[in-house]
Length: 266
Image 1 (spheres, rainbow, N blue to C red):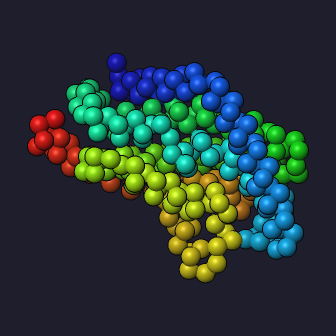
Image 2: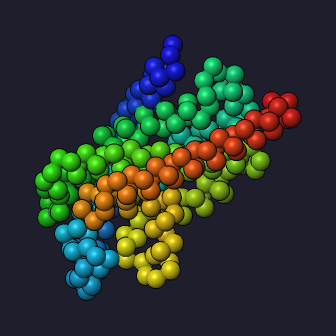
């Protein structure tokens, strides 16, 4: 099987695998919708006190909330089963089987994660977003090019998200238990992606720093594309640069980890 067909099949398998968790998906849709409502009314109160906070009006702030709920699981901002499974395979030594496959380890897991993310977007992200659009006034673009650009930004966000979590998973080769690193990354992701508050509202040097970190590729950048607050090409360049840099770093760490497995007799 050609490499393109192989990784397409892996991605399709990841999509089908997560599609089997129907009860969990329904619970996730409900949870995202409830949290979306809580955040919307919190944002409404905040924006009533501080109109145009972060450069958004109230309608844009409401839209931002529902974009966040649509992308929370899609971009695994709070983590996913994929890196948890990879860490467990490293801990138990089953990763040796993966290394013997006639496939690239990083691309295999990337394809699997893209399949998961695709299902999460359709199965868990769309319904809360549609609910928000039906119940609240939202600043949605009329041009199809903006929607297309938003979807491209989401896909690039998927790759950046995977690259971060892949590095976290690889830490298990040295730590044997990556739970601590995973929890730290979860907190960093929730804060620095804009899930807690839009990064535009962070003042001074703090705002300057969080807006250039890779986590801003996950929510803030795609949301700004949808809201018309960011240029398409500058957003793609930013996300693409982080994707390439983090995947390259993951490749280097993977190479070092593979040598470690050989030394340990794995």
